[in-house]
Picture 1: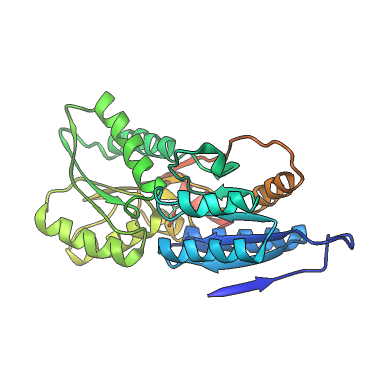
Picture 2 (picture 1 turned 60 degrees about the horizontal axis):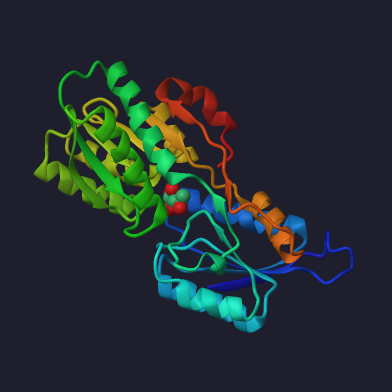
Length: 310
Ligand code: GYE
């Protein structure tokens, strides 16, 4: 589903910057907020935005990027669904001298010159923050003894799934090697349906889970449904930590069903447009433009809810 939008504002009568943007999909609340932010900021900046949704399929992203190369856009931006397998198409962009800006997720490449910069979060740190906030959650719940953890991973091979798991494990291995254990871990593809289905299976195989660490709110919300269907209380019988901080996550937290959320900000549009302009003008930009984020415990949920922007 390909759409182009343009606006007459802000172009100053000159030729408008044409930006080709390939989005991952529409798998989560985070993603919808990110898409809205990108579209709005492009309009605000007066760019012509060519936008396509890859429905979480790498082949769709590659063909969208190829079509932007053929159309000769000024800059290509994309959020890569998985980290590997981009070199060929990125080389085609480079050969046509079209700069590529990564947003949200990173890639693994042997040739660092294939993209200019990444505008997005530090997912490894989010994983560490999740483990740190889990310490507080366990303390607050008065949990004693071993901690059996279930992990709902994001899309297999995606940067946020790999790195959130890595950061979490880092803190766990360093500080909780004796008491914490991940007893089950599987992907729920960052979706509610995935989270619900996989959590139901987890509860079958491991009915004694103490904690759920879900790589995003949507999977956590799906899991809450599975936990309730199994006759347990989310947030009490199973303590839940998620990542993102979308509105529905905050609602679940204010209802006591999620214990803590590690924020991951999807409102990357304005920063992205700024960088795109600089790249177009040939200015040097930082290699990684990081997003600022916070963490939230349940007792902060009600107060924070009205101020949440996504
Ligand atoms: O956490 C999840 C989304 O890449 C940071 O993708 C993003 C992740 C986000 O589907 O909800």
